[in-house]
Structure formats: C-alpha cells, structure tokens
Amino acid sequence: MTSSSNSSSAAAGLLKRQLKQMQTDKDIPGISCGLVNDSNIFEWEVMLMISDECKYYGGGNFRAHLSFPATYPLMPPKLTFQSPVPFHPNIYPSGELCISILHPPEEDKYGYEAASERWSPVQSPESILLSVISLFEDPNDESPANVEAARLLREDREGKNKDFKRRCRKCVRESLGED
Image 1 (cartoon, one colour):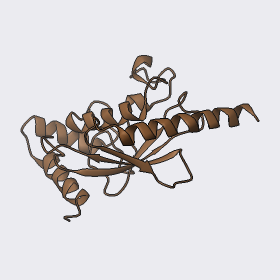
Image 2 (tube, rainbow, N blue to C red):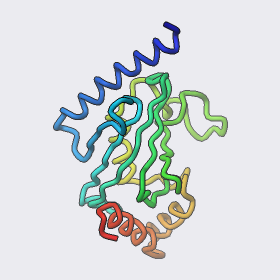
Image 3 (cartoon, rainbow, N blue to C red):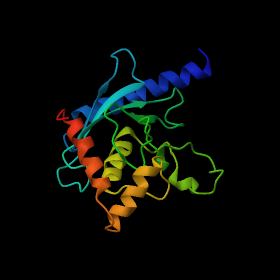
Image 4 (tube, one colour):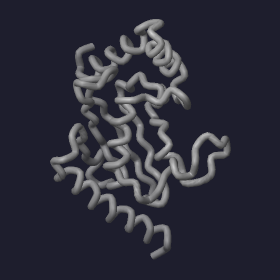
C-alpha cells in the first residue's frame, strides 16, 4: 500500500467517525449531514437550517456539498452551496464558500489572513458548519467573494437601502420552494 492510499484510508476512517457523530449528536442545531453517494465518504451533502431569528436569512434551508480531499485532515475540504445559491458576501455566485478556515494552512500571499485564521487539522466538519451558520448571522463584507452582495450589505447597514435584505429574503423563499 502506498503512503497516499494509507492517508486516504486514514481520512476515510476519520470521516466515517465524524459523520456518524454528527448524525447521532442531537446537540447540533440546524445541521443535517449525509453522503451524496453511499459509496463515497469524501462527498457529503449538508443541509443548513438557518434560525428564524437570523436577521437576513432567517428561516432558510440551504443545501451544500462538503468535498474532502484524500489528504484530510491535513488539508481543508471545500464547501459549495447547491441551487439556490444564497446571496451572500462570502459565497461566490458559483456557490463556493470563501471562509478563512477553509483556506490551506500556508502563508497568505496577500497578507490578509494570519496563519492562525486558516485551516488547521483540529477543525472538524462540525466546527466548519457551525462557522458557516455563524457567517449567515454575521456576514463578512471586508473580503468579499460576492462584491455586489458586500456592497449592498454595507448600504443596508448604513440605512441607504434595503436591497440586500430583499435579495436575501428571495433566496430564503427559493430555499423553501416558495419561488
């Protein structure tokens, strides 16, 4: 067995344990996890059920895929929202999430992020998904993946218009199958 297949099988074993824990832990509100395909532990489907109290996205149910590399937990997974993609400063229009903890554990060539803010093997699917839910509560408009969403969020915070909130509510309705 090669070292890459050893790391892949170690990652698979860890992911199986982490998935089982998330599926049986009743203390994780708003998160549901399963496999995209029963034969591939490296591709998870997640449902994030955003609390009704969330200012912009309250009541939304957003589906995403969490794709783990064979080198997990040394390297981070990638999270991509499925249709409808939430209108959010930290989500590219393609659905890919941009959040520091999912960036590789290396120096940021632009100097924006400290190494301590980036991926670390102590992170888990649970901590990732809780961070994503937190991002729905408090979007980061300072390093946007979606520039238009960041601009509209700033204008909303400044009281200039409510276009950001209107676009978010539309995404919530779509996520619930109402549009």
